[in-house]
Image (cartoon, rainbow, N blue to C red):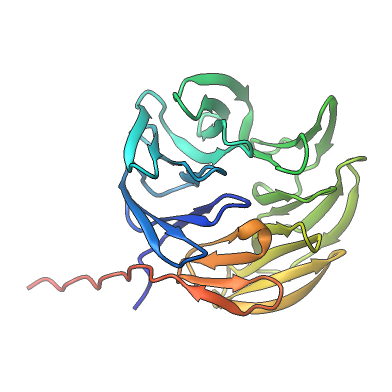
Length: 295
């Protein structure tokens, strides 16, 4: 049978994964023990990226198109706050220091919310997504369509030209930033100069959808999918722009890098070691129930 999990969220260094298995319901799993630790009844609906977990693993955040954004205490499984006034949410993420929520809206703006109270700390116009890092004070502001993204490092700012209509993923390393785009390349940029360091061009019909970074080995990783023909996705390791296939991760709905880049968890429940492709453990995710035929 097929896994019922359709959406995954992890923090960079944490050992929990939030798994969305239907609209509203989210399960929290411990990647080290392989055990489910909580189930939350939330406002989550599918579309965009509307599920996030804080780096301190205290808070799970979910968004919806019409019913707003809400935060939940993972330990007590209770609602912390619910902003029903915020509509048309497309992207939800948590800052690296677990103090703020980045909430990207369809209306070409992004709200910065306090994770404890839900109050609005600021508004970024023309920004769809914010990517930050535990390694430095750098930020990537992913802008709306046809505009360059902005790499901000303290008082220094670099423009990064858009090569396609949408950024798929972005991740910071200690000294570099890696970006993948729809029907476009994976590019690596030097944080000190903003200059492109290397580029990988996937074969036509394929995308690198997810990116990860492992600080201990200073390696970037990605998941390669064939959006034209389908089939299994591949875990890649990048060595100065040259990809090495680590392992096939199967035909999965979703995947997320976790455990500080040392692992990749998929919607099938498998947790892969990014170094050698071995399966570290398998989470017993619920399976999709077949629909009953009408009489």
